[in-house]
Length: 542
Image 1 (cartoon, rainbow, N blue to C red):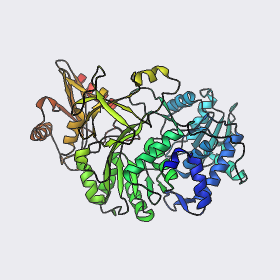
Image 2 (cartoon, helix red, strand yellow):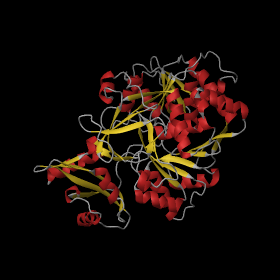
Image 3 (cartoon, rainbow, N blue to C red):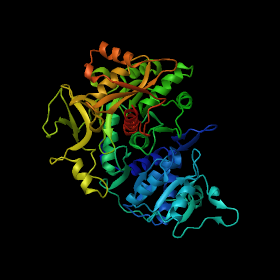
Image 4 (cartoon, helix red, strand yellow):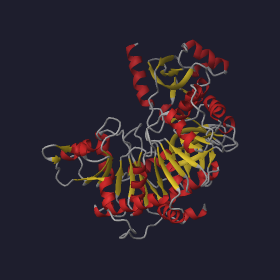
């Protein structure tokens, strides 16, 4: 794996294609017939797509925005972008027009790769409308997957927008002659390769650039901790526009030479069918993926016998769910913590007991500390503000020196915004977010720990605690609960459960709201700001 520090991802893929041109590289799950691509086909399509980008005037260092679902097209366009030294900037297909305008302007992307339509939305038409309205100052080209027929008017063809070219991606690639890629200069491992925008759940999305070498190291050390090799098969259901799908799905597979099985839209029965057919051994994703598969197996779907390891990211893995998943799915469950800015920083090993390692140990080269509000290290066993430094931490936000200065300490540690306890063993236990703290009359409630205890209640399927305004105490704890089908629970049952676990009474939730599903972003993180808005409304109407 040490060679990954000296090789670009593109070179690794090219070497694999030359060595094993007919070997299976990619599987895209379809409703009827799955689509497969060999290493040779992948390299050829990526080179043709790279030539297309060069023909459109894309140059090293500029961003190419890829707004595609998990797909072979996503992998091809990501590789093509990297191949010419440009920066791959993936964004979610669910992004609305307002948010798309924001990231297009921030990234200054002149090329947007987008589907004609996906899940009921006409993405290419929406982008065309934005350009026609003059809201995309930098955009010059739309590369459309799925054809351009949906953009065509019977009378006058595709709507003409000044300074914007619209191209059928498949047709452009097919029309490009096969052959060695020309016109590409030397690429450095220290060049920025990836630009990812934060989810924006606590403010405006921020552009986070990462260098090629950083991403290679992040994947190399993570795969070493989990024990992954080229013989593994990686099932990718997490969005490729997030680290879980992009870095620890696609990039991981390409770097190790694994087969990657790509699932465009999450559906647990489809995933289990794919495990039976394609024999996936590794998957990374948020806890809801794990829960859905456990539920599906309970409902007579086949267990994924090939699945060896599942890494839970996005939020803390409920211990009860981890134990049940291990028994029902037969897989080892690993806990991890990281962020867009730090990549994966802590990770448990497959043989670890999640009851003792909490959210994992720092990966090699990563250092963590918990500090008080004055920046003083609180040592082990005490809750503090989690700060991180190491080889995967980004250098700073895109064009936002002010936010970068706020994010780093004077001695160069990244302020994560999370609360955590560093155990004497070196393991990290995430206890909440600074902005998620419930301050009840000056007493800080350890929200993360209380949520874990509540998730062990047999009636509770999912739970989140947020602050509810209170005239006397300032804030009280409000529990949002998702119950298992057919189960009923009252506030006094919740409080009795916490009393059984000897939880301090002032930490107990004092109001409960039932909800069908907790709002989560595509990375699986609970959008607590939405829950706080509901809680404020409930308090105001009381």
